[in-house]
Image (cartoon, rainbow, N blue to C red):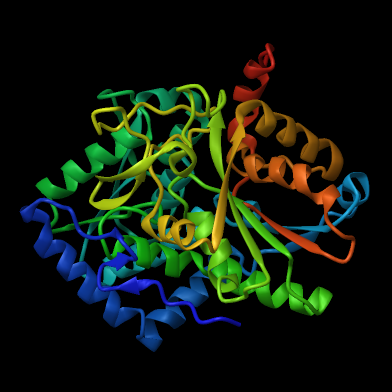
Length: 400
């Protein structure tokens, strides 16, 4: 084990900070103070543990993909099955924590951004459970791509606001949610969905998602008696990957690889590869790596995956990249779709198209690794929401 302590004040190395309007600073400070208290409060942690266990269904499975391992040759492949959580993704881990915190702070209303809709569904779910008013902001383009999740949110009692500004995707949804929070923070908590934004959100979301790697590390030691050689996950803002990496970071022998959205290829302008093609900038309350144009303005990004269609990455990921502790690779749409199909046909698992980016990386590297080595790949969500879109991508469509 090596020592790992990235955070100094509000930053991870050079990244992070609190770049927010003055009107939000008091609320940000209240949130930080509340979180610092409750994260060490035995009663809060007991309530959250009970919700994770009895409502969400944790611990999630660590599944040995025997057929895929045999087919690819090389390393043994395990999947951390966050797709089996209640609501169908890792998002519920963070949302249960934040909504419980909001209740402790006396908030009666929660708002959230969403891209693929999984965070919106999880937020609407927790709000229904805890009796909170809920409003979700989602890019209009994403409401079309993810119509199933829009209906799920509405069914759960949330109001969904299609965002028509900008390119009508995730970054624009974040803009509108931030604006709404600025206008009404007295009774409202912003349930930010990933490890980005102003401090304390990157730290707080990371802590709630770190249950993934805490479980996975114990599970693999129980199953195999040793640590994996490689841990990998898809990366948009970076919450499932940060959760998957966190408890392995001190283990120097474990390679960490995040898989960004390469879209049509990082040599084109149709991608969302913030580390591979981005530069340091400031956006959405934080300093990190962002896809930018020559004038330093946030550039339009693209991915077949609504959940990875974001122009930046969380500040702790930026630090892990700067320090060399983690690597970040770009996976194209075509590679992800092929992996989506491969996993379904090989292991009978229909994963989210976001998760398929990491599965594609496993396909690339497993055969070059030793049979004595182990890969753990995070399946961050299930793929029901993506089936129609993938059918269209392949030139077909679904018929009633």
